[in-house]
Length: 341
Image (cartoon, rainbow, N blue to C red; front, side, top):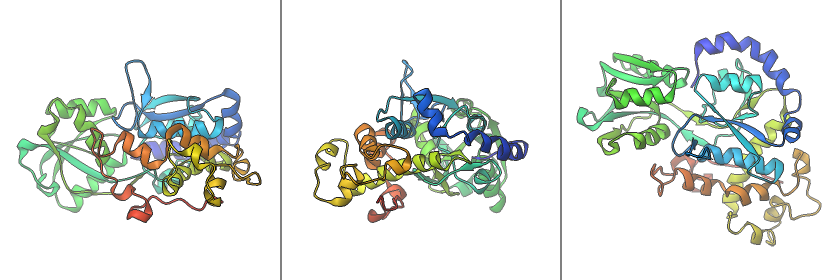
């Protein structure tokens, strides 16, 4: 989700400003203030949304909690900054947030022109289309002439234009900055089609007054590797955010869960003992600038990758999303952690 105007206006400034903002050692700043400031969505069911009391839950929110658990041993030491598709990049560049965990696509321009660093993908996604069933449309190739609701400042907007041009289709974009505005426009019938990442479509569908009257079409028109982003210029913080994801994936592969993590600390498997900080001579935590039980703290607080997925967006939740590409590499998916040793 990227905006050409934003990139052009801020790209040059970010490489100087963003890098210098990160050079102050983010980990030290986080420890000094006592919490992680995490940029999240303004509200996307299953991924990041607040309840009436302001308590945040969701797939991305659990990543924020996991980072806090790694740094402080306490998943509650995190605060959330809700960001729109356009404001999220400024929030990270300016230092308003320490990390952006907001269903954000990793692209080359964001790695370079915007001055961010991505490494891990916590959700492999792709852009799709949702339509009312009464349109009797079975494929995106039948959408020529349709009015399409789309959020500005996103790769979704660019992919939409590319897809319709490549297939010689006409469309009328109905563009809004805020997700809530797009949702309201589609609900009100101001457009025939809603396009965003498929995960988002399943989430947004639940918010409609009659969810069963809408379908997600089968086409996936893009690669959308979603994951956390940090500012360039602070490798230590970059490593902590990246290895938080890897620890959650590795825990699932080891069979270490939130329920059995204490028992697994006494495992005879040296890889598991090292992973959970139960080997006295291990330095995998201190080399990160953390304690050696950092991975244990993550799993104890939020669970492994599979638990976080299933709890928030899996087949037993209202979203009913299959693991698919987000299964472990050993089970036909793409989720893979480098060796933690």
